[in-house]
Structure formats: structure tokens, C-alpha cells
Length: 239
Image (cartoon, rainbow, N blue to C red):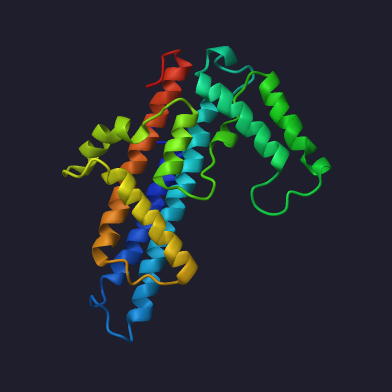
């Protein structure tokens, strides 16, 4: 068992840092006086950017950490015994990333990508998945991409299958699409803040609700990834 993961523990620390920004923001009038509006906007914007960045980092690190338990020399589970989605998507993502080069910056010459291609081939030959290749948010940790990441390893309908666990932590009735809608709202607001530097549209209530929401969601996803890895290691069909 690897729950809570190191990724989740680091995420909780980041949320605590964001909550300290919220505590400072709470000292100002709401709505803020005109002369204090720039400070309040900076605090709310910083809070939003921090929590979304922390959530995105959590997704990447949690996937790599939990799926990394399925790698080894020799591989702990034979490649043929792995879920089909995990096998197929690991191979294609691994080679695709190696052939294209780094996501950020110029890919450079083809010759510069040879070491990555050889490493990807080595993993395939040894019967290992490429956990790092599967741990990609592609710059957008919204509900669509999160669902795609889980579907790629053989866990479709993520939000439907984890809703009961989320509700148990959230402890208040919400609409059927609440988790997806709220996650997309938070990520969309981060994009607005990053591109316009406008953050006063974020309410004080958002500050307290968003951090609690992402904490609950990250906890559920981390626990589900842990169960998934344990099931694969023990040759149990993942659900």
C-alpha cells in the first residue's frame, strides 16, 4: 500500500501554503477598498494559481509514483498480464513522446532524440510500462484530461466510479456533475488569472471552498491509484 503517496503529502503542504494566502486576504474588507484592491487581487490570484499548479503537479507525481510500482528489473508483473489499456497506452505514449522530443522548447535534431527512443525501446523489450509517459496532464488538469489519464490505464468513467468516495469526504449534497464542473471552474479561472491578471472575480467563499474541494478530490484519486496498482500487482482485475 502506498496511500497516502508522497505526491499527496506534498500537495497537502501546498494547499496549506495557499490557505495562508487566503488567511492574509481575509484581513481586508470584502469588497476591498479601492486602494487595497490591487493587494486583494494579488492574493486571490496567487491563491488560484498556486492551488491549480499544485493539483497539476500532484496528478503527474501520483501517476508516476503509483504506476512506478509496476516497473522493475525484472518487471513485477508480466507485460501480457497487465490490463490491455495500460499496455497499449504505455507503449504508444512512450514512443510518441520519445519521437517528438520534449513537450516544452524546441525538439531539436532527430539525432538528439535517439537516447529517448532507445530508452523507450528498452522498456518495451524488458516488459515494463513507462509510468512517466502515462503521467502527463498536457498542461490542462481539467476534468476531461483527468478522465483521459485514468481511462488510458483501464479505468473509464472515473468520476462516476469515484463519486461515492468523494461524497463521503465532501459530506454535502451536490449535483451529479458537481465534481467535473467545479474542477473545470477552478482550472478555467486559473487560465483567466494567468492570461489577464484579473482575479477579483474570485470570491472569498471560493478561497475556502476550492482548497477543500481539491484536497478531497486529490485524496480520492490517490486512493484509487493505490488500489489500482495493488490490484494489478496481485493480478486482480482493476475496477
